[in-house]
Amino acid sequence: MVFRFSEEKPLYIQIAEQLEDAIFTGTFPEETQIPSTTELSVSLQINPATVLKGMNILVSENVIYKKRGLGMFVSTGATEKIRNKRQERFYEDFISPLVSEAQKLGLSKDEINSLIERGYKNGD
Image 1 (cartoon, rainbow, N blue to C red):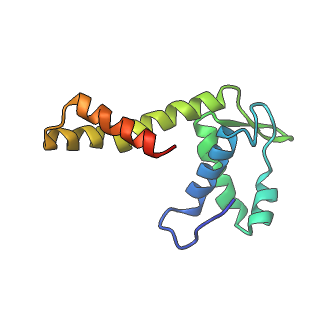
Image 2 (tube, one colour):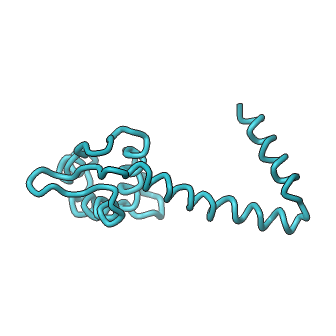
Image 3 (cartoon, rainbow, N blue to C red):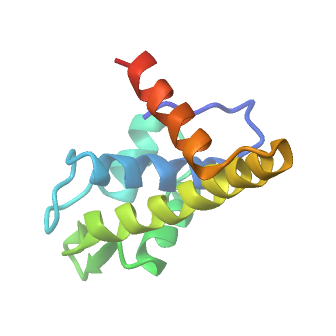
């Protein structure tokens, strides 16, 4: 995990996002244990309360859960929850503004699709 202390985003949010990304990419598969608050705070040299605050975000989203006396584990279905959350955020952050701007420019749906296809071709 890499943290940007100069970034405006609080560390606990960065922790939650990076743990979420590790779960989404399979670093921590569903129903496996993730590193403890203490392990993360020592390895990252961050206050344990900050790490716990980030983990609690994922607990509240049912992405991870606590087994008393054992630690935190990735919930069954966590990957799908993360995928759905990211798809909705993708729509809100990119698609909605894209359509809004395209309408201002007078672009049709076919013209937008053509531009997206062009983007995919250039991305290969």
